Image 1 (cartoon, one colour):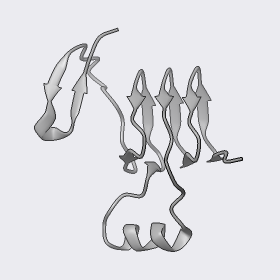
Image 2 (cartoon, rainbow, N blue to C red):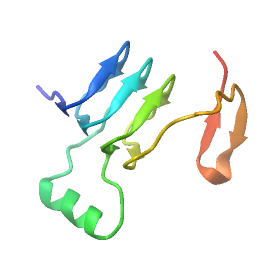
Image 3 (cartoon, rainbow, N blue to C red):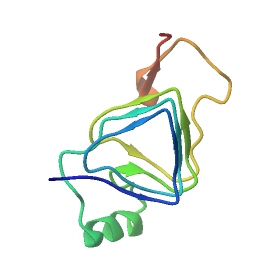
Length: 100
């Protein structure tokens, strides 16, 4: 059975999906859907060396009140919606915000 890897994370009122791999992040009131596959340590090292983001949530990232889609890649040092925006359509920037 596939689980997830959480190291030094703070998880509050959240669901962490299968094959999620997180280290040093905070999730609050969040649904993280997980991943279809695990990236190997070699794949993760290669992605990071190329300046790319592995599947999952990066270190020192704070996410609250979000639904994170399957196979999402969230980088290091990210904070979601500091301004408390309720509605936004920004597909060119890769996100939407919906109330409710």
